[in-house]
Image (cartoon, rainbow, N blue to C red; front, top):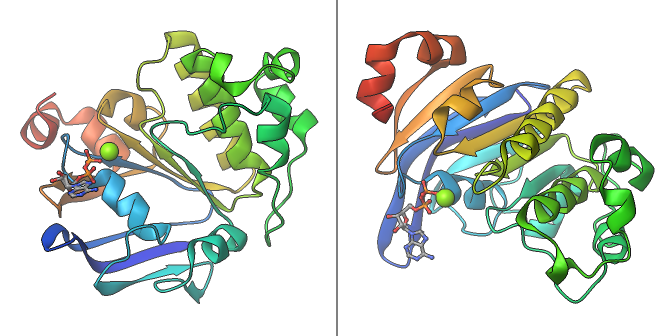
Length: 232
Ligand SMILES: Nc1ncnc2c1ncn2[C@@H]1O[C@H](COP(=O)(O)OP(=O)(O)O)[C@@H](O)[C@H]1O
Ligand SMILES: [Mg+2]
């Protein structure tokens, strides 16, 4: 397993958001992390990244214990993030937003030209300030930034939210491309259908606990189970 999260409890102040959450992702595997609004999906990602530190439990990545590692070290270990708000530096150009994302890790480095081969519009947006991009264009830059961080694991938080179907299919194609290269992904989605269309396995969170985990095909094919867990 490239990522192993074991029994994490995460709090915001005195409010507990995660209760003993465990999940694992193998090299090159795609995990769908599903659940209703407020279930704890983003908190799980923030815990893995060291942004909201779990009080109990352990997180291991690529054979190292990262539970208490600072966020910049976790990034240098090869975990990259596509945040739900696609945060870019608004007054910087796309080129600059991409350049500052370049990092060396134990995993393969991507070039800016390679990101153009995934999202061709990026090449023509290079001199645009990030604040003047559409939502879809911001998402392309945000994903390209994650690739330039040389990931062994990419955490996508609600990557399809508010995007046109064409961009959503480009995002899913990127997840498949990463998989071909042996790079693992966690795809957080409220839209279960989208995440299950690319996932190997799925974890369903409910009020901060793991309600179900198993093969994505099981959840895709079993309408009764999906209805009970996700209401869709
Ligand atoms: N910054 C925060 N401060 C306090 N509580 C928070 C904060 N962020 C999230 N929460 C709470 O933690 C729980 C899980 O939230 P979150 O992980 O964002 O859920 P999801 O991403 O699945 O919608 C919710 O009850 C939410 O209200
Ligand atoms: Mg969230």
